[in-house]
Amino acid sequence: MTSASTIAACLLATGCSASLAGGAADVTPPAIAASPTAPATGYDGLTQLPLSAYGLSEKDDDLRYRTRKTLVVRCMKSRGHQSYSGQNMNRVSVKTAADKEAVRPAGAWGYIGRTTAAHIGFHTEVAIPTDAPGLTGQATKDFEACSADADKQLPDLTHSDGWKLTQNLFGQSFQQASTDRRVAAARKRWAACMTSAGHPAQNPEKLAAGPWKTTKPTAPEIAAATAAESCTRSSGLAATYFAVLIGYQHQLISANTAALTTYQNQVQEQTDRTAHLLTESPAA
Image: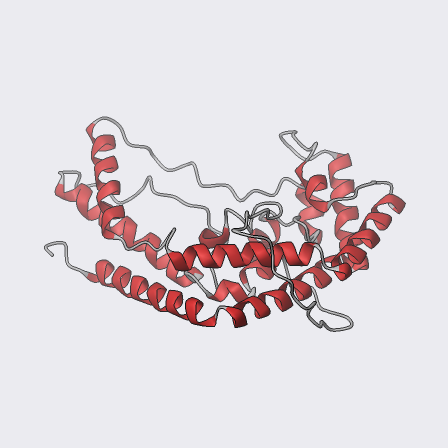
């Protein structure tokens, strides 16, 4: 399963408009169940897509983060900062069910969780922790040098041919799903439901994006988000969207099996190297 870091730029934004190397090829609309089941959350729907099997898993991503932090800590101690423990190194963590429900849930599939909608509306960012102490003076300069050194040591396949292929295939699948007649019909049902609920909207993505710029969610925002959650369920938009998307991705994988397998082997080699770096002694 691909981690959030692998697809964040495209998938975990509110929608995905990945540029393609060329137009999507003619494909056969995939068969889906008469009554498809929606994923538990939009986050789950994205990270459990067939193409998400190609790339770093969430476990691999955690390993990479821990290894990078370990390398930086070792480096800082070697530079005389014996009390340094990586206290300024933080990242977004999507671990709990509430986090998964609240991380950018309303893309083209209209997804937003009931609890999220009722409590925070469309204010759905998972924030990076900011309470950790910062560094000053020479420690700041040494940290920058240690971070750069850690990045050089860690293997990275970003922008490799396999990475580019996977991103391109993701983009094609989103494009194919967006023009699928079943998704279009579900989106029309969603829009009709929103109009009936008193919150006219044609696009779930644009509805989630604004004009909700207040510090805290307002009553109108909560009402619109709650209506969007209800209409997504009654229209079957999320269920249809992900079922169709999965079908198109299976076709793309079948057409690119050899290249994707090569890429996944490279990912495994990268993960093995990262694990080795984590277990190396400081003296090494």
